[in-house]
Image (cartoon, rainbow, N blue to C red; front, side, top):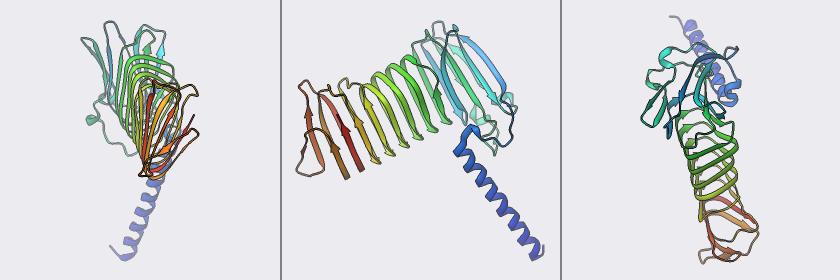
Length: 303
């Protein structure tokens, strides 16, 4: 192969790589609004199942699919899978029931590699009967999840690697946990007895929260508006900013600390001897406990 052909081959490969990077960046930015090939979404699979005697719905082993969850007036659970292109049978979801559990899953190991994994713009729709108020467990590798209606459950537990979690509706539960490696968590209203919210990389925004629990973030901002604190709330971040809004009538004991940054409040506080710890009491006892800690960034707490 002469030098001219070698240079031409290298140039073609560079152009292909640049185009692929552009496709990946655009797909990441625009998500399911971006399509390599435009077309209408097609039904791939739909299945219903009775929730009689069911106390746990498990949504497991999903990768690359966006998930939308809402309640329905129907008496049966319904799962719908759509995509722009045809999905092979071994890539479609399966649903089964064992004793008191319903398991919805996809064998991700059998999914063929597809370079454009905006892949089929695949979506999973989960319709849960309104009268179901037990447990919902979701394990998702990558993809966004949206709650499209108010949910009332015993326990809601979500674990994911990458993607965003969003709900513009109320989530009412005894226990709720959201654990995400990379992505934003945006919740309109979280009314629970006990919560655990954790994002390693991304922002955490909750417009109304009540109960007791922990909210943590390694890299990103945290913005929380408290409706109430049952007993305690702990908020932690490694890098980013924390903003907390508390009700005017809430009596609480505040303990805030930082390694590099500052703490701003609009109520009387005292600084500890190390000048990196801020203490304060608001109202009359009994006091709820509110702790906020950050390694690098600012904490703002507003009453």
